[in-house]
Length: 101
Image 1 (spheres, rainbow, N blue to C red):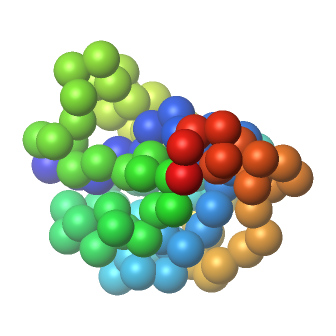
Image 2: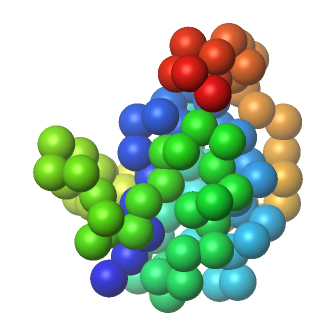
């Protein structure tokens, strides 16, 4: 089991979630975060930290988002680990508002 970042993170990359991860499972892609399924212990600590509700435990993932399990698994292998809060991407606040948060 793992926790998964979905497309609400796209073009936001808020990083409040990474500071709650006890095993440093987050990876920073150029447009969003990903969770390394081999590192994640499925504690769920990051889920309530996301300001755009982009993170789900895989068992709670809506059916139309199941592809994000594989996307996280493959993309996490490509990007560096992120363990500290960073500034969101340019335009992230506008994206957050457009998502209704």
